[in-house]
Image (spheres, rainbow, N blue to C red):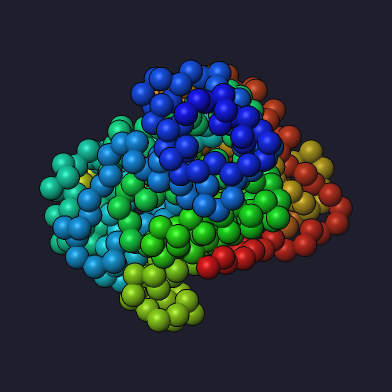
Amino acid sequence: MRMVDLIQKKKNGQVLLQQEIDYIVRGYTNGDIPDYQISALLMAIYFKGMNKKEIADLTMAYVNSGDKVDLSGIAGIKVDKHSTGGVGDKVSLIVLPLVACANIPVAKMSGRGLGHTGGTIDKLEAISGFNIELSREQFIANVNQYKMAIVGQSANLTPADKKIYALRDVTGTVDSIPLIASSVMSKKIASGADAIVLDVKVGSGAFVKTIYEARELADTMVGIGNSLNRRTIAVITDMSQPLGYEIGNANEVKEAIAVLKGNGASDITHVSLTIAAYMTVLGGAFLDFETAYKELKAIIESGQAIDKFKQLVEIQGGNPQVIDNPTLLPQAHNHYRIKAGKSGFVNAIAAEKIGISAMLLGAGRKTKEDKIDYSAGITLIKKVGDKVKAGDTLCVLNTNLADCREAEIVAHSAYTIRDVEPEQIIYIYDVIR
């Protein structure tokens, strides 16, 4: 088998066989195939695509390139969720304890963030003492006893995907549906889940910008999951503006606490309840979505959900007092108000610009080596549809930096104010089964 022949084959739009895909992934992971040949193949895939069988084979080649997590020691149907990412996306912090309240085991493995803000692991580490490095035995014991645990992803989980993703990032082939789908699903399959709910974000702050692209990606990932015997559902959710009112690590923990106490904003509460409801249906706690949504809402109102989050913090070494008193979370010293230049209605908030502004404040990483300032972030005061007067505060930048002029400029440019009131934003666009 020669790599040049396989590049030519895909360039001509032909289908790669499973043994050919295995050869490519194994050879690149081992260092036998050079970057320039994989780069050529990635570009051929970008333009010619892959069929469902090829994508499933690529997914499993990624899975087989490293460790696979064995969750057979955990009783019940293990349900996981994955978000394609967005600004202010703290859904995992909310659904983990909420789904555990329904007696469905959630053995969660999450990553760190590179970009706008930290990942779920970074957010939880804003809580003093929170330990994300549990032993395998403790991880499984916690899920069996408490129905929940969360740890950082193993360094050797889908190493081929990590290596190829780095190459995609510098060759302009990140936005390829087959490559995105296989990358996302390989990590979920390797993590050992029996069922998966995918939160596919769409809009200015998401990786995919149009409903058409989101549906294509969702359909592809659901197809992969089901073909590999994992019950999979995808929910397409809005990311045309930041989710909720808080962006940044400690900020988002604070907002997750508010949602679990029943005091959350309508968008983040509805999206979180929707994702959690489908997780509990796949896990067998409820027969249908409507019943699950209603029961989970009642669990929040009863106080069980916030008690469960407090339990999660406690069993993983964090300070549980943070749940009752979120002011114990890291606090920024400097606060800068971004004000409206004219009166009218907020017609749009460019989520990506808000994310970039938060990163400039210290909430995210430009490179993997960067350190996150857990206290840095942005608090939105006005969102799409709100009426404003000239001089009103649109958002507040929280940082320990003495000079954040660039972040101020970017945040101000994120807001579009017009005289006309905009249409109401839809939070959930579609569900792909």
